Image (cartoon, rainbow, N blue to C red; front, side, top):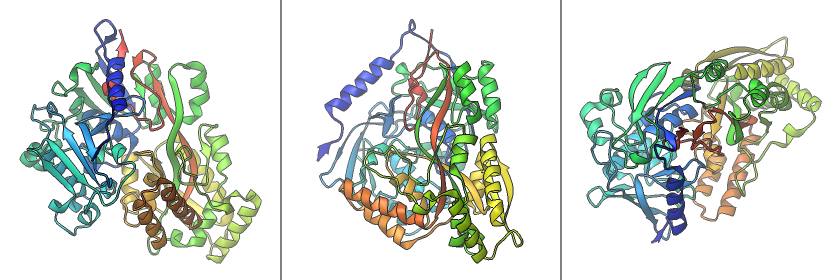
Amino acid sequence: MKATTSLLGTLLFSASVASLAFTSQQAEARTLQMGLGGELASFDTSQVAGGVWEAQVLMDVFEGLVKKDPKGNLLPGMATDWVVSKDGKTWTFRIRSNAKWSDGTPVTADDFVFGWQHMLDPKNASKYAFMLYPVKNAKAINEGKPAPDTLGVKSLDDGNTFQVTLNEPVPYFEELMTHFTAYPLPKHTVEKYGTDWVKMSNIVTNGAFTPTDWVSQSSIKTVKNPDYYDARQVALDGIVYNNIENLNAMVSRYRGGQLDIAHSHGFPVTQLKSLKRTLPEDTHTAPWLGNEYYVLNQREGEPTADLRVRKALSLAIRRDILAEKISQGAFDATTAFVPSGIHGYQPQSNDELSKPYAERLKEAKELMKEAGYSPEHPLNLHLRFNSDDWNRSNAVAISSMWQPLGVKTELDNTEATVHYQSIARGDFDVARAGWVADYNDPQNFLTLMETGVGNNYGAYSNNEYDKLMQQAAATMDQGKRYQLLEQAEKLAMDDYAVIPLLTQVSRNLVNPHINGWEDNISDDHPSRWISFDK
């Protein structure tokens, strides 16, 4: 067995703590006011809708086996260290002795076993359960087959050691341990209160902060968790997460001093240039492993289940207009699903989408005619998007691009949580979606098109695609693995599984007097590192 933590990692951890440590002379303890562009679905991680705003809240109040520093580097979390077997399939984590829930109860390996079983329990219908599928028997359990206690996880040494058995070696497993699907659950509290464990009067958490009050569609208040093992190094008294889906209102409240951070698409793309001019120190943009795409409902009987329709709709879109005019250069046009920036991986596109627009439009019209649609016999499409001026501008522009094909588009927008719940039910023809990497690997994007995956909103299914993904999962050589993933992406793009549109850039407004905020490719910003200048 070999250790995955090293002297370099230990030094990095020590240096990070030292550089972020504070004294009363250096920083001021206060409550952070953060604006988020959506509502948390639940503190029960199995019920999370998938918004980046949800990940922010959850990473502050819970902690997994591994955590991140401000730059996105991995550090020991609930585990002090871990070892990996020679075949890469068995991971053994030692739980830190001073890890506690916010009620003072020790965090043990049993809480991780319980939390992972809860995530995979088919009764909970978690859209994110697939994240744990690399674990032995996880997929089958989530599909209601073997009993939960056959999951490849164990609590050893009276709960001091957590052991995971994987189906195959997973290159990104260490980073996956920072994701909310891998968080523990307070077994003692859930067993006492059942589903009511998430009520503010009952909830306990193991992160740097713990929630105290939640007003739906308004705010969530948290306070510093005194039982957090590293509480002495946490500068903030607490955090208030303000739910502000109207990004113009977000900017107004930031300018008015009501917010310290405007996060999770913190300002409209249309304000980027003016904000860089008027608030240059506050305005943060950075490359982000994220995409913007349209989902096509491919369930039986849906018009977009017809390949000709899917292809025509994609061919007719001018992505350059979306990138250069509507987003004013804040996004890059793309015809690939996986964003650039993953070292060693080459994103794959459909070659026909690179043809001149006039050729694409002509072919699109012919395809729609073959499918039985024309301006005289239009196709009526229901296009969903979550409330945002930019999303609306894109939807209006794209619907106008589809008009020459004989497409009449009905636009329907709702707040983000409702939007994603609706498209998860298949209540749409075409829908706006975006994905930000949970870990730095192309598999995290490509799994969204695998059969049966919870966030495969359009229900795309291709046996050949699934086989390539399975082969990649069983391939230890990274170069060969990426080749298989590239083949899978190319196949899906040629099948018009989705409509790729743009690659994302993170947009945040940050008070210049804040320390511990670093732009990074994941746009992850754990608040336990944040402090204010005195």
